[in-house]
Length: 418
Image (cartoon, rainbow, N blue to C red; front, side, top):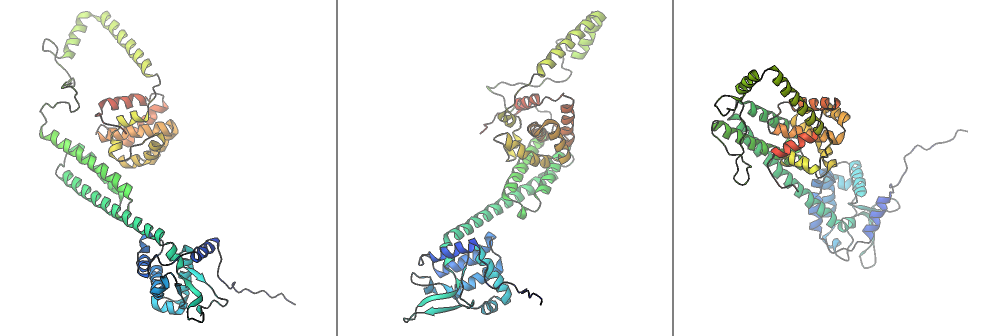
């Protein structure tokens, strides 16, 4: 005789620890603090949090409006006794779809189910006509969690408003900088700024789909590019005018030495040196050359000494990190923000990874910060090639990051570092 196997699916409602906890919370809820109108508004606004979709919100609103307003008073019991077929007719879905939606709402803790023995929904009344016991969709859990869910809705709305404001500022800044670029066509420096703006726009993509933090950082980058364009405009309008150093202290003016500067007799220094060498003779020139080579060796030995660089030194050397909205507070922050900086200036991931393999994550992050700062100052036209060159010098043992950091810090404007 063959064994009989029943392949029918198990009958009954799935029981989970979360559902049990929600049912206990509903039983301990005190009614009267929240009205039916407040719950209906909450059910309609819950989709903005991403917790439920529009169909689930519609069904939850129908459940709340089905229960009488007196059921949410202190002596009431907000339980809905409509069948799945009746609810399906009201929401325009099938009965099976309504059953699955109710199961999902139960898992999310928005409703609880009070089941009878045969899973029918009905009420049991006492001799006075009051509901003594009810089997159906219990809405008391919605009253218990009203404060939490309403706070989530308010937070989602605040985040949406902040994101919309950031998107408006980003689009306005992008529109302004593109208008400024169109009025300054033909300059190599302007082309470099335009390429950076295009990279920023490609990283952000569609503003409505980008995060608020990405939009704020992109806006800061664009505003710094606008400032750079204004400096280029003023430099082109007054090319031969002498300008005072913008960061001179105590009214002291330090001007750069011009190439081929004139000597005391009005002749260029190169011609004076050539005349002196011709007069001194070959032996004197050889001795001077030896002394110069000895000085170069001594200075090289001094520069080879390891110098410790702090994170504050890096911030002073690369103030553009603060302008871009990603100023690191420690080394781990600098390492984490390095990939974003690479995408910002156009450094490929392959070049960045090779720098990490050669110098380590911390030193590679410092090299990226130096590259970004020099690119922002328009001293470097190819950030990708510049970082590749630094990696090659590090492999040859000729890279001195401390010299670059302190040199940039000396040429950076004084600013307060938090």
